[in-house]
Image (cartoon, rainbow, N blue to C red; front, side, top):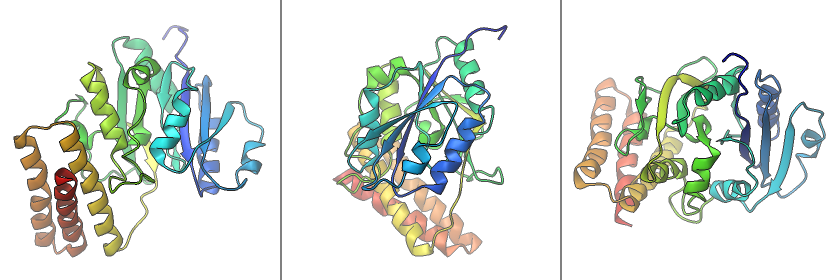
Length: 281
């Protein structure tokens, strides 16, 4: 970059009920090669369990904010405090590789027309779910479903200002059945105002892949499916797209049964039921 100044970051981190995981994230941020960032830490705990972490000495600023429980509510509490040029939304239990912020900052510095960048989630062994797309693409309404998740999204603050607040009807802790998908809704709203957002599968963020029981997997499928159904209706997707989104989990269930994977088949069918529920609501 020839010594060119790289853009700054505000990292919006909503946290509740976690301490050691948050410490691990903050340690990974302490190791970043690009130092121009702040953490906007939205503390949704009902106690002061984070006090020891907040008093640790670090080489970056942590701005503590408060909000009622709910992921979208937490992010909305931070939107008014954004001062940096770039914004990201790390989960409190993810980890950034040492050069991640520098890599992202260089990409934005080299592409002034770029409004947003999304990457891929990997586990501690560097593996991704088979659902992740492997080809770099500009995001569209049709292709973003397997090319973004909250903690791999980086946006210009100017785009965040144009989109505004997160939909509090969506996301963990919402008072509705649509307890995920808030970041997909946010990106769709960005695309609707003409944003250019690129997906780069080589850009990865580590997030542990905790195993769940078959019943918990079915509950997850229904939850996420309901949120997708809600989003399909909210953003007035054409019938052909809606039909395809209903057909996909049927195909997934049949493929899982062919492999003898009854847990995955149950997940796919629960996803279908959730999508129907969300779309009809």
